[in-house]
Length: 242
Image 1: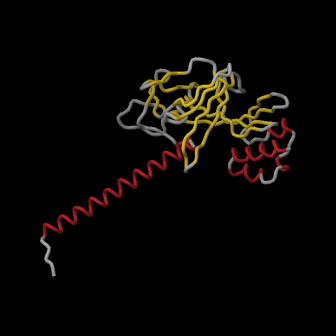
Image 2: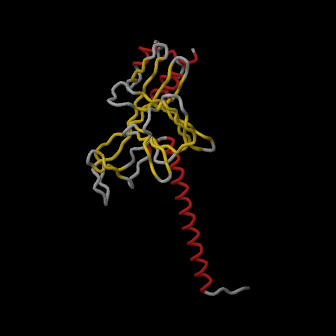
């Protein structure tokens, strides 16, 4: 039988502790990566305490961007020119579009018809397109509206709008008094009448201007009670198939 010295057991214990720490670090990294991916899919989950911006003379923590990563995308200008494979960021506070030029972030300074951003999520490429609207109900400046469902009769849009609110809690080592928060509103474009309408919080006014009752769409009332966005998408999808 082999005999092992105390030094060997000390080495073994140290090695096992190191392995456990490495495993914890890798698990933490995997968790953070997974959390970041989920945040990209649903930007309402994303809040960055490490960043702050000067907004109207106040330090605001978080990010004004919908996604805080440079994402590959395409820009279509108002006159129809297309710019492919640019790295883009959408500023949802100022409602502006930025592109990466080397190490610099530059704001797009010409009229944009729409832009698309895409990223890899769960093994597949997700793409989101945003149409530019110079005027939208209850908005005092031009906005980009995200296409959720588009068809021959109607298009369902979502406005992702960053706002600033008072900090919910103090953050150490920062002078910030406010934080960014994401507010979402829904619009529907009636293509037959070319009218863009703001959807009420409960979605009820869609029935009025689209002339289709919720109870005529299988499952929509139940879905609206769980998630209004999914309910609206179900309704508009049914509408576009009629």
